[in-house]
Length: 105
Image 1: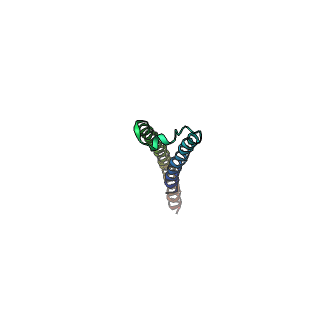
Image 2: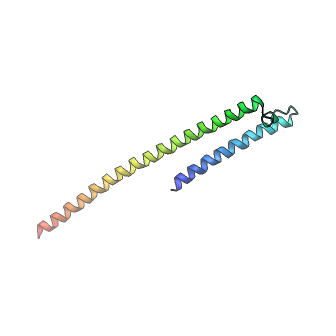
Image 3: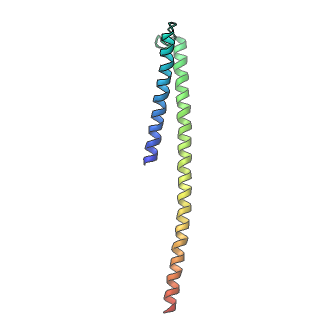
């Protein structure tokens, strides 16, 4: 539960941080007087290409994060299965001790 929410928060945080970084780049070029940041807002081929590039970038980052999250959960499942086997062996060991105690009667 908590890990999935943390991962979702991380995903949203990454998107927001990268978005702010992107806006930071465009505003710095605006200050340079060239108006480079306003090219995207004006539409045009360059702006559309930039928007498509950003969308691809975010999709790729999201795909990487989901793959990492999936791998983490698979490792957790593996760990829990091993723990179940260990506990089942412990249960059998205790059952055998009970049988021995009953056999002594």
